[in-house]
Amino acid sequence: MMTARHARQKGPTQRQLRAGELVRHALVEIFRREDLRDPALHGLSITVTEVRMTPDLKQATAFVAPLGASIDTEKHPEIVRALNHAAPHLRHLLGDRIDMKFTPSLVFRSDESFAEARRIDELLASPKVARDLKHE
Image (cartoon, rainbow, N blue to C red; front, top):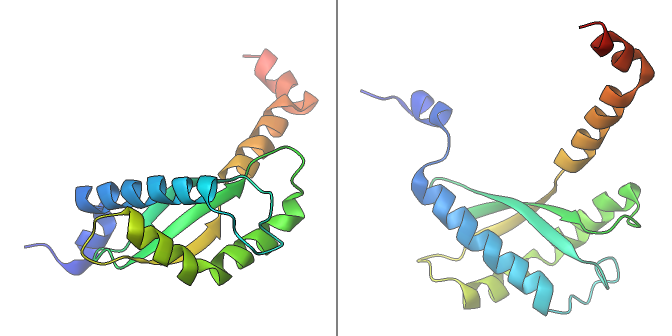
């Protein structure tokens, strides 16, 4: 018999993954077509890299990143704060685009994976690491 603890360690179910992709695609479409009035979001292209759903599918955590090399990384928290402020409106727009029993509430988080990948690339390109890799 499986306990709740073991179920948590397994990862998301197929149902959660499918719902997350459905929500991700809908949010991408919303960000592409809708004009968000918040000054922090005006004129930005935002990508949704992943959406994680709770097991009951009533809450979605969307990982987002602004597109473009000119975006200052210090602005990311401001962008995420603006998206979380606009979450009720975005949820309403989402409800018009998806066919689910419940429209999930939205929480936005900054996707740090691009910054982490850049940091690892810079680390691997450093002369000290390159020197160690040549010896092998």
